[in-house]
Image (cartoon, rainbow, N blue to C red):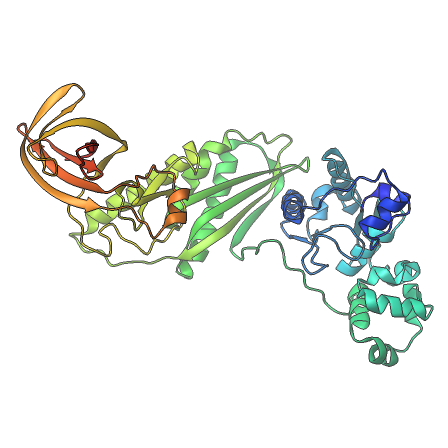
Length: 482
């Protein structure tokens, strides 16, 4: 339902056939709740500029339509209104940004979520602020629908002439609960602030964070670096006491003009090294325009893991240091080139060589149950594989035997030693998976050979399909042994 339908008298609950009978030119568009929910989630994320505590309205059993027929977003602005010089400038900024984005918002601010919900949907203004502890008086004239109660109970109340919240103030609580259940009293107490109403944020707020509030705004890069290093030192010390390290960090810089800058970094291994983490932030700091100055810097550990410390002896110290250096290099490259542009290979159980690995971003915390050796013993395979097998010409004594010579890049390579074959057949038990893989898969049997030429170089080639007189087999070069 939209505003145009409401103006023409089409109310929720009317069937499409009845609506078309009244208005033949009616245009109906199929709802897409999945896309609507994604859009609402992005809008809730954008509202984090006003508070990190945002949530989608949970009414309607998780659906986008609630009792008022419109979607909603909760924003807990406790402690953040002063960044906009008060609640009214914050609401005006939020309203104007929603209008620019193509939305027609209705905004309500109150001491309790229930009162704010009612003010956003039933006040006459586009945005309305209920003064502290004034919700009982102001909401008295609102319809009972503003209490967010079940439609069936709402119908019973209206049949008894109870249409405004004020009507419930005059009824004793015990008879009201015994006849209509406890939902009415609970919603009423939540609206008036007599009962707490917890709201879960759209994502869990990390309990590991630090912040600096400056007495005077700062704007120099050296001051920003020093502040970030101080925050990292404090955060890492706090995590180290709990045997934790960070995998993801979020830095939010609030400026005097009510704007903010958000930076995110990730690490390939759990870390609580402030020197290394500060270097990951360093490059993006030069792109920050401090404007009239920075007044608050907030550092949040959005993902933490247990720091698995190990005892390193003198023999393994060099290898451990090399692993740490490699991890730091991966972090720096991922930060400079993009998190999805630095990848690593993970083993995947498959008999087909080109499908035995998967590519994931190096910073992803991917845990594979497979290992590089595999659950079964395989003959030795080369480390270097061609992206696609290269067709070659082969001469063999017998059709099903190893080759004596092959031509690759217009050069003849005479074979001194050959080992094989290793026969690999198509994975017929994975028909669906084979269709979804990005690597080209052959539906024919392969016989792989390890070939060594007179110069000592070793190649990995295979014969595709079984040799037949009417159709000789094809040969391909697939990899190199080092």
